Image (cartoon, rainbow, N blue to C red; front, side, top):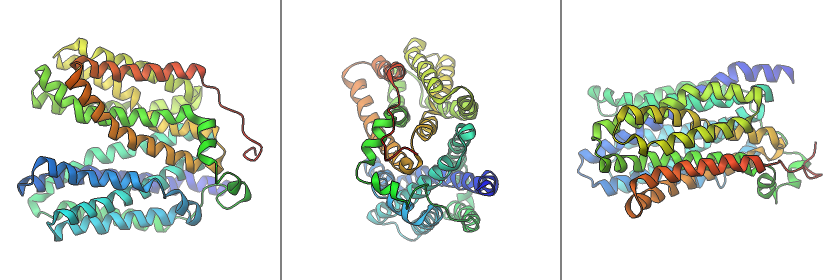
Length: 395
């Protein structure tokens, strides 16, 4: 048992982090590259966006069935299948220009991405010791952010041939695939024991009863990310900012997340997840509420975005770590599914809610609501007390 923990802390952990970096880079490359190709072919922006949505539909749909194969077959096979799906679908984009086939290929990429992310995320969370769980899951979040940020850099490789960016990304996937093949397969704790069968029918209710507060951050992070990417450009243009100013302001949220993700994770290991989440929510709320006061001062907006991104950027990973602190490992896979569904639903709600506020209420209302939801979350933390475990879940 001790050697397994040590192995997880070395080669296994490094391999999983590399898988996440490459997966993030692949997604960061595919989204803009395929949009550029469709734009160059004269496809309308609306059809371009509809085609892009297939990836997210794949991610969302996978969450409703991914738990069962992970419990039955273990982490490694699911990661391998996810990698193979992404490689096969990505290579196929170069061989056809038919839009409906591209839609199906993006759907497959979403399914593959979702599978490997779910399995790597759960493998890390369920095997990390409590005193290092925040650090490890924060490194997971940072790995995806780094990968997603460097992915678009491969667009420049088109100079050597249109398919070169995709081929180069798949070479990286092949490298991590061979690394994953060297791992010893593991299953989620309690995947096959009697205790797991006791919670099969009511595991979702059990997770919500025990950990409703730690699952809210996944929703709030998805709402923030999708709203800012989808609505801030409209806010900025109507306020009087240029498209160039908007283009360098938005990435500052991600930059803030990369800067503070690991420190907050380590801090949460020492002082507890709940106070860090509550404090981060208050800081993020203050930053978002102050944005309308900054007017068109780009330096001030940029500083507030860095602060907000740093505070809120760890919400998803810290929420998962907190859930892992509270839940029996037998139902931890269900908590990961719920967090992913929360994130996906919020990603769909965010841009639509923000667009409605900008059109029917006011520009400032967009950030007023954004900040207010984090204040409500922090206030809910004062009332949250983890419910006691039922007899069948108690160790």
